[in-house]
Every structure is written in structure tokens, then in C-alpha cells.
Length: 191
Image (cartoon, rainbow, N blue to C red; front, top):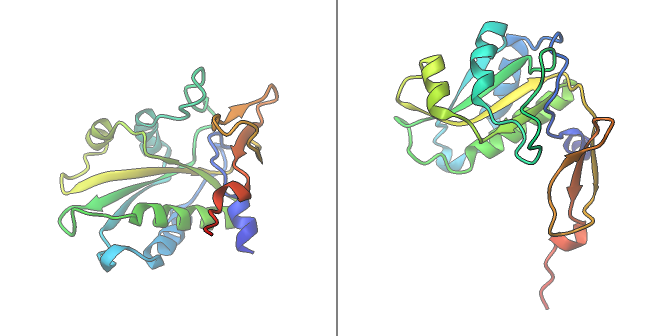
């Protein structure tokens, strides 16, 4: 059921690194993105797939892991993602990628959840450093990176106690808490 997939689709930042994600699995996830709708049907998104440890290590240092967790600088050895999808905009097809990377990312992550995986979307990226590290051709713009793997952490959704405080946090047992606004706060009723 789609409700269950969306509810399980949390942002996971720690993984069982020894649990591999195969090229075949990544390709299946990209097929979901390929079939998703896109602005003006331009289909300007392209993907770099990484499942091998050597390439994963080139990607990892260019990602910013958790803005609200100031004392945490990302997963430790053994907790790093098993795979990455680097989402690119092909500037030779279009200079406006609309909202396509958001739609494609959701499709990829819902597919990952269905396969027992989890992920984390990154917009906070050292784009220049990652472009250099992987020798990405100039025609491509890095739009987003998705880290994937078998989740090693528990993420719980809870009702937001203070509407001015949207920050996620971890408790003493390492459980990741994500406050969400109440449904009634989201629906605007017009008279």
C-alpha cells in the first residue's frame, strides 16, 4: 500500500555497510525514475550509479550529512551507504530541470523501501569537489545525490510539539526523531 511505503520512507543516515546494493538493484530504481513524469517531457535527468567501495569512497566526503545534528559529521566506518545515485541535469537537453529531480528521487526512494532499503537525499553537496573527484563532464549539473543501503537506525515520526521548532534530533539510544506538523495544520479551509 502506498501509505505504508511513504511512511517507511524516512531519511536514513546510517547503514549496514556490509549489506551490498547491486548494480541491478540500482538500475531497477532508475527505471522507476525514468517512468516518472517530468516537466515538458524533456527527460533531461541522467544518473551516475555507484555500488563499488572505491567509487563510494570518492563520493562520501563531498556530502553534508545532517544540518541539525551539529556534533555529528556523518556515518562512521561500517555505517556508510552501500551505494549512491548521483542525479544530473543534462544541460545539452535543457537548462531548466523543473521539479523533475524531486519526483524522480521520490520514485527511487519508494522503490528502495519496497526492496528493504533506505536512503538519504542530499542537496547540500560540494558540487565542485564531487565533479572533480569523478571527472563529471561539464555538460552535466549535479542536482542531487541519494545515498542508499540497508538502514541501521530507527527513525520515528512524532507530532510536532512546537510549530516553531522543526528540527529532527536523536535520543540517547540513537533513535532519530522527526517532528511533523498535524494534518489539520496543513489543510487551508476557505470560507
